Image (cartoon, rainbow, N blue to C red; front, side, top):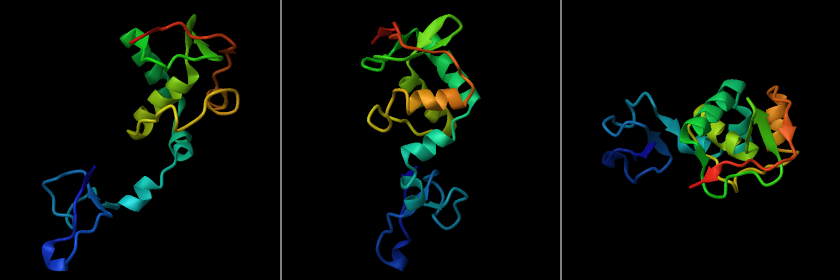
Length: 138
């Protein structure tokens, strides 16, 4: 998203006006929306938009990469899928990007039994192991 302001004839710049396309004037932009609505989206709102297909895309991305970024491996619980263990909190972060385009950092949501694992269970994943995932880190 790119911030654009009101035309100069209208006075001061308005940081609440947002457009995805720099070439459009704010009033004629089809992407026009209020920034306050977008910035008010919490991690819980983002996580609520995740569905099972987003989790599968996240699993595929980890498989293709062959590694998990440094400090994103799980420390206690892992999702077992196709014989491999995946870090639940990192899966949720990747799935959020596929669902909304917004990246969740480790500080945005918690892992463990009552957050990441609960989301995965609610989506139909049943095998949450009490083991660390063992993906190489980069």
